[in-house]
Image (cartoon, rainbow, N blue to C red; front, side, top):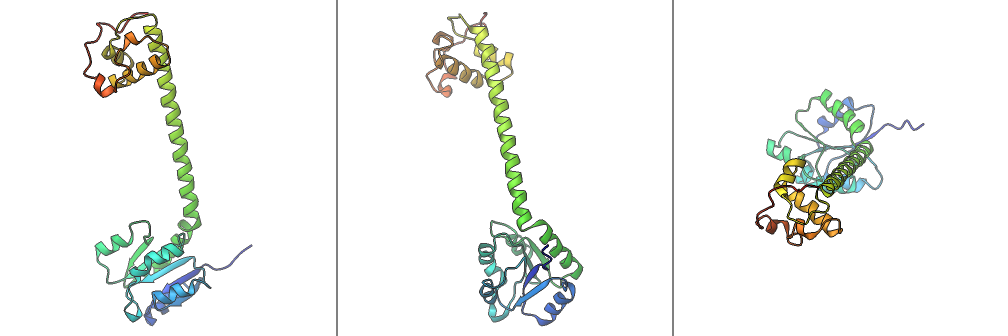
Length: 230
């Protein structure tokens, strides 16, 4: 059984702040860098499970400038921004888009909240997040498939009833009456008639405009006075 402590990459230039992280996150394997450049350079030998990223760093670097690269190189690793200089709009920007941070905490950081956030990131993000996304996608596909099947079944059932009603009829069908009877739109009935005529199941006389786009057929000749009797 693998009992390795999760690795937290802390990108923080302030020594006092890092000491607080050491006290709060002592159960994790902490790796520290003072700049974003150094953090990128260490990724060849360090595989973090969580990244804590300060915004204002040594050598004039800005943490958010490195966020796209971290998300590119560590696509499934949660990133926690910790900063006291970001306004609300900047925080929202950091949390949006495909290369976003997962969390954004203000400084001075509440250490209990920081620990809870790291625990939540390890539990909810990373590989488990990917699994949930795939599961959601599969559920969505199944729902879509069921909906499509239901629509197809409803359409075939309605067309069979229309066919039974109009079979043997050689006059124009009353599309509005059929639409009211089957509780669908006129365009739906027009499409049904088009398909039935195309399949040779009904004569063209029930819908002479069947070859025309439905939008044009809407302005066609007057309809028959009745839906048609079998």
